[in-house]
Amino acid sequence: MNNHAELQALLKEVLSTFQTRFVEGISEFEIITQLQKPPYSLFDEDALREPLMLFQTHFVLFHTLYHLRAEWREQGVGELDIGPTRITLNSTFSPGAALQTNDPLADYYLDWKNLSKTDEAGVEDLLNSFWQKMSGSDIDHSLTEDAVKKAQAVLEIETIDALSLAGLKQRYRKLQHENHPDKGGSVEDSQSILQAYTTLHKYLSKKNKVFT
Image (cartoon, rainbow, N blue to C red; front, side, top):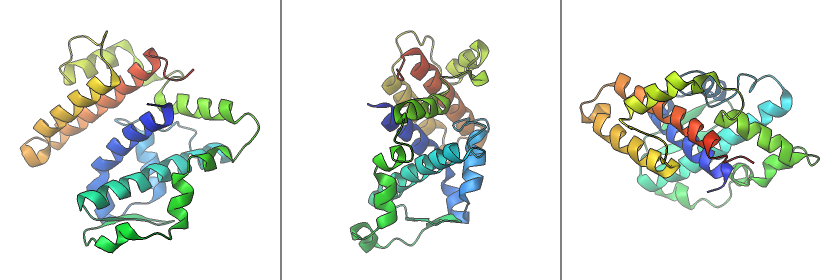
């Protein structure tokens, strides 16, 4: 799987845990600032500062939100209304929404080439730099030895020497299923599992040199 698809999958996994917040309604700014903080730490601290970085962050978020909207439509979860000021999940789902063909905003954000068009010169360097920040390939204080060991303990993984991203995802989903609040688990346990997953995902991405 290529780098942007791998990180999109991780970001979509995290955003899916925001379902209650989406029902209440949440702004793009609130989502980004939440994803900048632990237990997520998915967006760089400068994500909202520099104009180019802001656009990249915005595009990646909306790219993933439109993929999540399609997934939730298929599952009958509801209709994710992705507005310019607020993102809201409406429980009333219209089957016809999935058949809508004229959605220029969705078409724009789902076309990954529109991100690179923001700067034709040196676009590969810009994208690599952005993804490195997203994945923690730059200096990342959440990837200390203690943090990695703690994440292993939470996910009950004895060794990560031969652990793949696919294996990590499988382990994460199993534990989330077993410890989900709807299954009798606690919100704290679910969040701890998610934090451990994001930590090891970033660690393995860096170790396996996903970004070259």
